[in-house]
Every structure is written in structure tokens, then in C-alpha cells.
Image 1 (tube, one colour):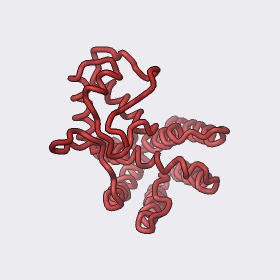
Image 2 (spheres, rainbow, N blue to C red; image 1 turned 90 degrees about the vertical axis):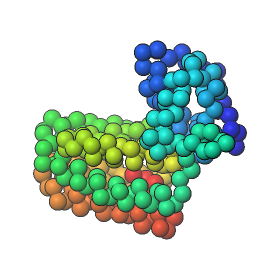
Image 3 (cartoon, helix red, strand yellow; image 1 turned 135 degrees about the vertical axis):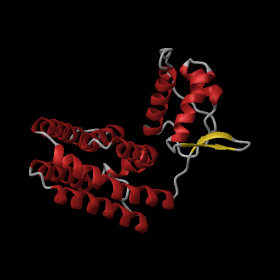
Image 4 (cartoon, rainbow, N blue to C red; image 1 turned 180 degrees about the vertical axis):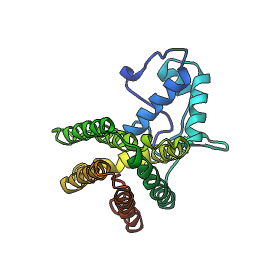
Length: 236
């Protein structure tokens, strides 16, 4: 694996100066999610600055943000690089998700409005449309799945807890996409995810707080069992 980041010339962009660090961070997250940047890859400040047409300062700030998100690490005598997630790391992340996501979903279920349910159904319809595309895009599917879940979680009003959950999703993002390309080839797996989403919508419509919490916990529990068995633990 090369230690240098290389993109096509078309990817080189001149970013606006007022929000450079955030725009750099967003671009790096895009590259992480589409596989341009890989786990364990060294992040060369000068090369990234050249590719993005900016100075090294916003690159450094963006890399610090990646480090805070748990996506990058500073290694002595090596520099900054993306983390390599091990089985134990992934297990811990899913265990935290299993504790926190049913909590915020339950609170959201108590507060959700008809308009918010309608919006969630629109997101689900778009998710199904993406699934039915001839050339299924793992990144697009992942982002829509994420949009669906956080459309629910954001309703709870527990911003700090949601921030932790979002960080957990960020840490898993490029790991999930690497393996997600295999998952989307599995028709049964994709149908299962659609059915899970629909069950969450039904629980929300019925204001069934405990049913929603139980379903979400059990579905994440299946992923946790998959981690132990080293099978399909990357689908949600």
C-alpha cells in the first residue's frame, strides 16, 4: 500500500477560505467512505495540500479533527495515519451502540410528530430506490442508511449522546464501506435492512417505545454475535 495519497486530477479542488478546515475534513471523509483513503494509510500533509490546492494549515486542522473522531492517529516517527480497526475495536463500538441507540430512539419515539414520521418514510422510500438501482453504490447506501437512523435519533433532544453515537458511526464508516460492497451483493441482506427500517417506522407510528428499543437492541445484538463469529457484522 502506498503511503502517498493519489487522486485523479479531477478531484483537485480549490476550497473556500472561510471554512477551509471543515471543507477539507468533509473531503477527507468522502475519500474515506469511497475507499480512496484506506485503513492504516499515512496522511501526508504536503501531498493533501497539493491535491486540494490549499495551504498546510487547514490540512493540519482537519487531521486533528479526524484524530478526535477516532479515525486517525499520530504515530511517532511516522506521522498521521488512518487507524486500522481490529475485531476488538469493532466489538466495543457495537456494544456502545447497543447501549446508546435504543436509549435515544426510545426518547425520539415519545416525541416524534406526524410530520417527522412522514419525512422518515420519504427517507425510507429513497433508500429503497437506491437499493433498486442497477449499479448499487455502497457509499450512497451507507449515507442514506445513516440519514435514516439519525433522522430518528435527532428527535430525542439528547444532543451529547447523539454526538457520541455519531462519532461511533464515523469511526466505523470506512470499515463498513469496505465490507458493505459485499453486503449489497447479498439480496437477502439488503431486504433484511429494508424490513428493519420499516419495523422502526411502525413502532414510531404506534408510539411503541419498548418495542422500538427492543428491536434496535436485538438487531445490533445480531451484529455483535456476527463479530464474534467474524461474519456479517457490518451491515448496520
